Amino acid sequence: MSENLTEFINAIMPYVITIVTALLGYVSVAIKNKIAKKLDTQAKQEVARLTVEYVEQVYQALGGEEKLQKAIEQARLILQEKGINITEVELRMLLESAVYGMNREKNAAENAAAALIRAQMSA
Image (tube, rainbow, N blue to C red):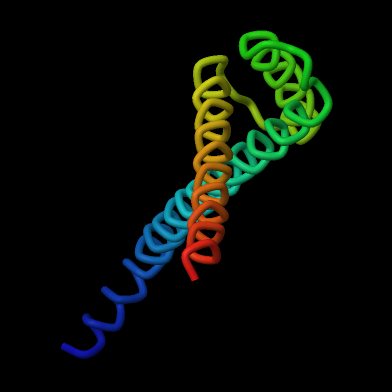
């Protein structure tokens, strides 16, 4: 009986190794793709934030839509250099989100400064 079991194990072992190798390969590719997507998303968000700050500084005289066009051009160039693909819709969303975040931070800072001034005046 043990000889039959040994022969059976020896016969199926190449198949088991092949299946395990294929599963590990699939899992590693899936993990790699997930990490790459997350890193691309983070890079896109960071490029959008930095581009908005840049455009706000350099193109102060332009209106909102003109600034957006400049931001789209700049961000697209940077992302292309990094080999990161992005759709027009996604880029606009990220830039608008970065503008919203920047404005929110600016408003919070202004509100904190105003509260400090009020506190000092009432003291």
